[in-house]
Length: 71
Image 1: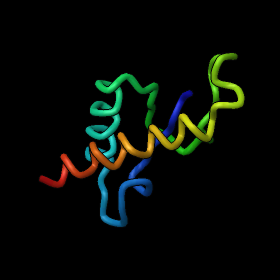
Image 2: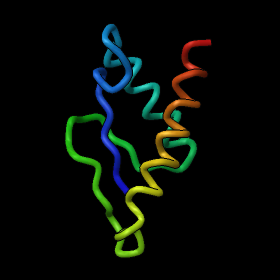
Image 3: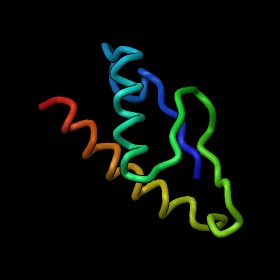
Image 4: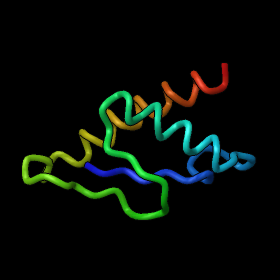
């Protein structure tokens, strides 16, 4: 799946630089992430019907990376 992240996904006072850092951290974990405000979409036939499971796994990694940024 392709995921999109912007400042508003991180928090009220987040900067573009923070969003870009989070994107790089998630890419390092193997996620297909870009800066933007588009809808997250399945990009491979094997992902169809698996969106909820993939979004849940992504959310776990998102929160993990976010907590590491705050350290």
